[in-house]
Image 1: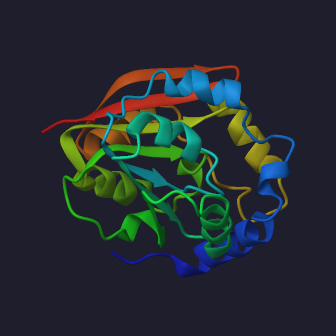
Image 2: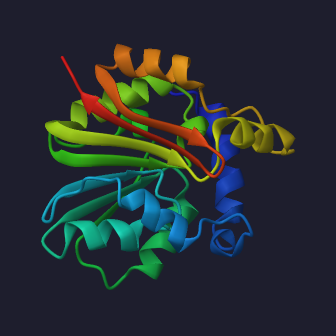
Length: 207
């Protein structure tokens, strides 16, 4: 598979510049909203979780609470400054490993993750079908894929389109388009929520 490095390079520069102030942004997620979301996420104690597009580690406390000290969190982002900031913030956590990579090309053991979590990143993926196929490859048959944002699809896409930045054309697919992508990647939707303040998808591997 060939990655469009030119498009990703522009986005990487954009997110690298934001990394050191990302946690102070006004639209950063609130713990209460994430706690509500994580009540719906199935990550077993001792499980192995992929945080795809981890950013500065916003989800780490919630994931680590789910998997416990015996679990393993693999944190991936294509923006090196995001990874650097996250690793500095959580330097005391011994069960987190960090990778700077595009999710479409992620090199991990197949069928080794109990959950793949993609928070506020899926619109920015250039080849969404390839990314979903990669997630399917990496998940155990009993695993779960979670894609979510703390905004409904229409509001999220309107916000992205209003930006004068490389992400202005990064859109979240609507339900029908996403369902087709997931089906083509051998997933089925278990739960789909799209209302004010939340777009949440739980998908299960299928044959």
